[in-house]
Amino acid sequence: MALSSNCWKYLVLTFNVLFAVSAVVLFGASGFLLYRLFIYRHFIGINVEYPAILLLMMAIISCSIAWIGWRTTKSMHQIHIIMAGVLIVLVVVIEFACFVWAMVVWDNIEIDIKTAMTSYFVETNYNKETNSDTIRWDRLHVKFQCCGVSGPTDYSSTGHLPYSCCGQGPLDSIQQQPYTSDCSAFYKRGCGNQIHEYAKQQLLFVAMTALVASVLQSTGIFCTFFLAHAIRERRRASIRTSTIARDATFAAPDDTLLASPTAPISLPKY
Image (cartoon, rainbow, N blue to C red; front, top):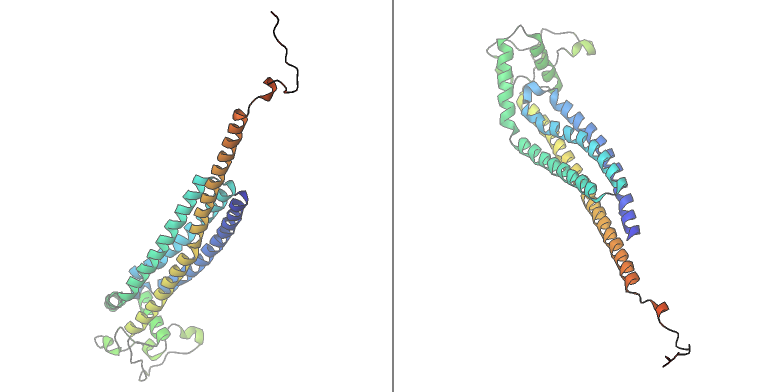
């Protein structure tokens, strides 16, 4: 029984190391996906980023739980190991909930993006003195080779197309391409569908990352609780052995008080 509990102990210690490594990988992946969504937050809205934010928080919490699991496993205290197992269960459940949440947002993202982009487009055209908003639209046009929200007709109220709809914008200073006054070959498609596909792809990566993390980390649940069961069985076996030894000690007859069968029997004198 002691060997079995030791095997589970080293298995759980190995899991905690892998759990910490997976938390670091999860932190990097969720942080990268959050960044890719964050740079277009003005066009897609902040609600789309919440699953990635939650996944990033769970990666940080998982590092702490891995350290707690390592310490409790080395101490071999049953109640502490059970508590560490419960924490792992909570992490796995929340990560799976993050997967479900990302898929729900993925399914309903089209309306949110079109609403956010239309509102931001109107705000940009209303506040024409704000150069930062105009630069964001220029970067979006050049990056996705699109124009406006639904197409070039969105700029009909302004009377002219921005140069970025022709493929030239703030990025041209890096590429050393000058602005041109000829904007006859402009992009025909709008940016709404392009951002929609982009955001759906990032959310799908977030969902798959959360699902893989929850499945892989769930293996530690079984290992942790099997270790707690092995500790309990070892304790029961130790108590059983001690009880048997104690009962055997008190139940053994004292043969020294009995006379030897070969010794002569002395008769009383009258």
